[in-house]
Image 1 (cartoon, rainbow, N blue to C red):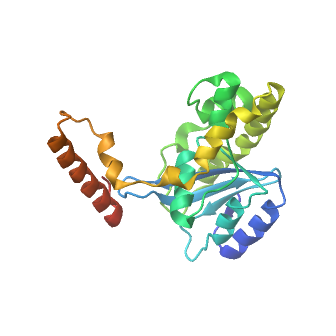
Image 2 (cartoon, rainbow, N blue to C red; image 1 turned 90 degrees about the vertical axis):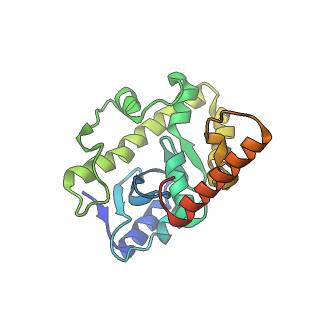
Image 3 (spheres, rainbow, N blue to C red; image 1 turned 120 degrees about the vertical axis):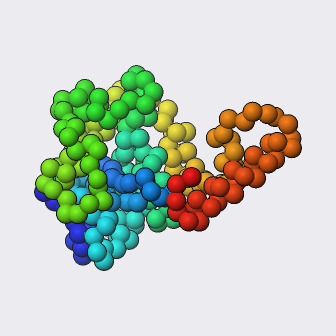
Length: 233
């Protein structure tokens, strides 16, 4: 099991990883009691190795990781990237770029909308995922070997999935079909939550201007309060 708990080890890994054309990335986080997700673990895979970075380790500085994710010479591969990227934007203030999202790539290859990672692991990597760790509490320490093994599987299988999907896109001359979606994922504005828009998630009973104005004001206040105090909506 390869887990990183110190900044020096993280910096050394990131220096090695920067020499590869692509990385596979995933995160484990919790969000039950907070507005902003609490990052617990970051898994990163290169063609040669895979590591789990303990984001909760005492004294660890994730700056080398954030710099690696911002390195435009290295492609970052995610599956269903949006929540993972949102975390990095909130913590580092910048979007990982460039990005390849295997969920979107799979859709372009004919898998349909929102295909799950487990299906791609089964269909493309010809492996199965141990589901026993799916609902584990990633904030508890120490992490066990089975937890780390499960977490690393999210980036080791992703290597083959990425390679095969990239080949299929190239063969079908569809690689450029991803451009618009990837542009959205790498736009910082995608992850900005404006309290003024919070009312749009609500089902309103009336379209009368006075009623809507009250709903909008209340929803904005509630959203801003949740953000400022880092509590659920």
